[in-house]
Length: 299
Image (cartoon, rainbow, N blue to C red; front, side, top):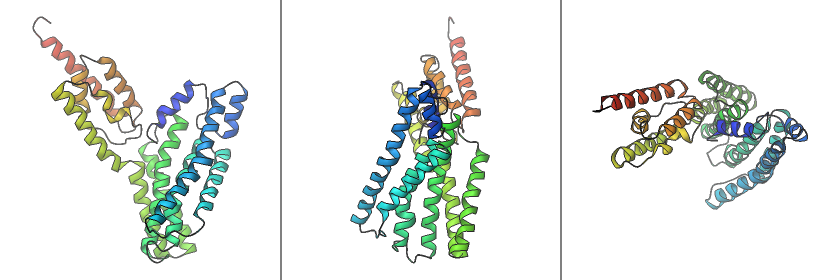
């Protein structure tokens, strides 16, 4: 979810030629000598078939314990989501199947069972439509970047995310208009679009990352303690917005720790929001460091 690009390259380094491939492709790679491919399949299937239903069951128990009404059959729906994810892993890709199957299993607690039980008012009311749309948007928004990054080794471009957001809103509009009504369909489509954009661009997380970036810079600026390893770009591959304070932070470390500066530059190349601005920050920091060295007496 946070470092899918790094995962892609780690899988490639382990000898897996198709990190985003189907189960059949990965089994064939194992038969040809890539033992890591078989291990990757087994671990991912363990997450999908065991971890996902268990997490959903625990989530459902937590909701019922909190007094939130849940329609019956949510354990069965969790198993169905795992089965659907398994089919998707066979026909589309292992990463896609595990990601969508696991997230859909959790989201159906709210999007289907809590909605059907009237937790958000009348089943065909606006509140129910908003709940369904939010679940749909969050699942698809979180999945689109991670699935593409594991398969291709880079995050999807902004226009691809925008295209996916439009599809995510138009499809439920058509489906729910035919099944329920235009008002419910409109609530689903609008909330799905907003939730998709917020989730795909990781906007709530970005606020936390800005704070973390500021704290890391302040600590090194005022205490001298090396904190460049704390910067969010080292730990999150799918930020679509630039990080503040990173340029000034690099300038602090460029003379004493050039290897860390280059590691941050490499991380910027893996971040959609920092591919074009990351290296200019590094170059600027290097220039500032060089200017500082040249301007020193006796340099």
